[in-house]
Length: 235
Image (cartoon, rainbow, N blue to C red; front, side):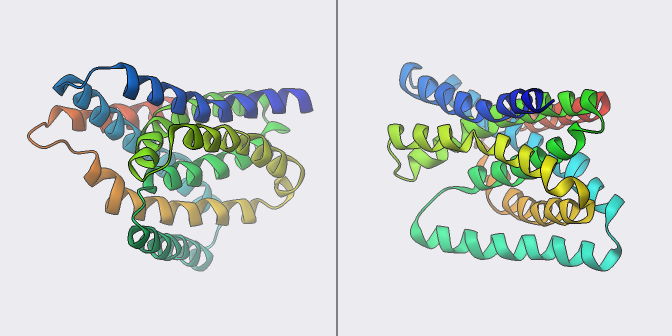
């Protein structure tokens, strides 16, 4: 049982590193061209759609299911306010980390949920692990680009992504052994993350995923959200 949890959560996490490696290969081995930028911005839009699907189909529903109105409001607003303050600080420092923060804010709570669900519904947990892994690929791809633009070296960025990939295992073990007995606490974490993710989507990620005079790239968000819908339907 524990080995299976480690394998599934490890798969969900390793796609963070894989997404970074793919972004590195794409940036350095694909020639500069309009098509290259169409692909980049379509993937950014696709990632925004997947993040939005995680918020709408996984994180918020869990909060609505477990929390009463007042804790729900406080958790959601707290997440938005905290990440407004953090984003403001990072903008002053000149960084572009919104996509990375949003990725972590759905990756970590979902990994915790994976661990909590695993003991009760292994088949559901398996599908959730696949869903999380598929989410992380485009999000990590876009996050790599943001960090490199912010001034991080290729090596440093990939090292960061390598260690971040283990957050899936840490989150799943925490959910399985610690938070599975406290569904309200897990729900608060998810709703807090939802508030922060929604702020980041509206303020940074969606505006930056639009390519001037190109409307078709925005369809990536529709496909990304559809992937989330399919994953939720299968789960």
